[in-house]
Amino acid sequence: MRYAPNRESISLTENRFIGLLILSTALIALSSTYIYSLNTSYECEGCNIILVSVEPWNAEHAGFNGYEKNITPNMDRLANRSLVFRNAYSTSGHTTVSTFSTFTSLYPPKHGVVPRNASQRGSNSNFTMLAEVLDKEGYSNIALTDGMNVRGELGFQRGFDKYNERGLTFSNGGKEELRLHKGNITSSEPLDIENLFESKDKTFLYYQSFAPHSPYGEALHNKSLVRGENSAYSQYLESILERVQRVSPENRRSKKRQLMKEYHRKLNSNRSLRRGAIRTYDRIIRRQDRIVGEIVGGVQRAGEMDDTVIIIMSQHGEHLGEKGRWGHGGALEDVIQVPLMVYVPDKDSKAIDEYVSTVDLAPTVLDILKIENEAFENQTQGTSLMSNEGLEGRRYIYAGHGDKTLIDTREEMKYLRTDEDKEGLFNLSDGSNEGVRWRNEEVMSWMREEFRRFYAVISNRSLGYGSVYPYYAK
Image 1 (cartoon, helix red, strand yellow):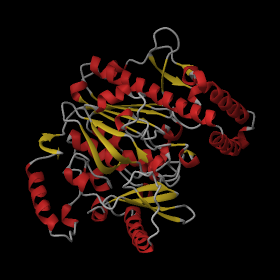
Image 2 (cartoon, helix red, strand yellow):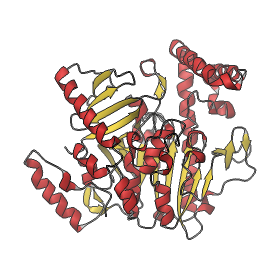
Image 3 (spheres, helix red, strand yellow):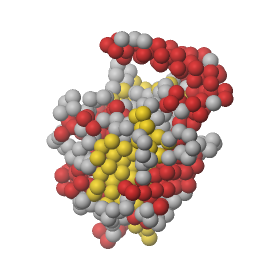
Image 4 (tube, helix red, strand yellow):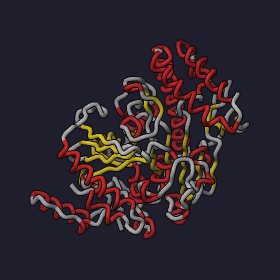
């Protein structure tokens, strides 16, 4: 069974779609995993999988998405051989929530996970995880994460043979080598990526990093990230973190929130600090690009590049001073729009403008690998991006925890509902990043009702993907 919707549930109201529906159904019956051109099959049965997730990552700060600064050269080279999704959206501005969506193909209202506590409502054990599916298929599953909001005890370790929470960094001095890292403690032995792929086992490698996390404290461990004019920012950042450390542990969280508000006000009022923050952020992304380069290089040295699928993404974006906003959370464009690329060996590269969601990632992986799993198929609310029906059949994309949004991909508009039940309707077609607010009450009323219906469907724990898809249909 393919990871795609049951088209019998679709009610098409325009006759011009019927011929296309018949044609696409016939083509799907004759082939599998065809996309973008009828002579290209995006399959890699039995291949290794590498999932790189760097958060928070502003989608505009990536060369393969058009960023003018050369901060992602290794990923850009891979992008030239990959599918790059230029309108990819996360399901949440919180890593815990969105990562659970990525691994289960479920929207937040259905999996019920809340920030920093994946077990609060017992949801962490109720649904099948991607790694569990791969484990049953004989994969060796290895996670190299920064822990924290994706630490194993929250349920993310399920299906993994090894779940490391020390992260990765480069050693200092002499020849820089990739090593496991936590805080100021770096392991004595370099991490041999090549060795992970030497065995005959199929491998799933999940690399995750919080290095670019506001307020970019990674810079304090790597002074090269704040050289030159960034030094003023480094000194200010260090003073903020020192003030947090002087507070008793029980009061530290509230004090940190207070200082972060001060930090954001300072960045907005001081051009030098603001410029230093953005340049430091870019240098952290550049460092992550080097780590990705080492990972890809290890795969190449192991001779596995022709048998490895590589996915690079983020679980959510980041405000970088746009309209005075910094950090993340909520459901605005800079937070929920994310970088996403998929490398499939020896397949065509292409930039894809259709709207997609990170809830589609797990079905896409299983479709590429030609893995069938009935429990996961019955669970998923996403669809494989390796099919024209998955890409072109979607009408709505949902994102949010607290603040919520529904994107109408046909009309390119977004309905936003805040935690305080305030509403907004925005035009996305001009790339204005919520710059144009629509005030048409008739459209607002219609989108409000569509949001209510869609939210009710994705929240229903007894319903699977087949019940969601009619609300995707154009």
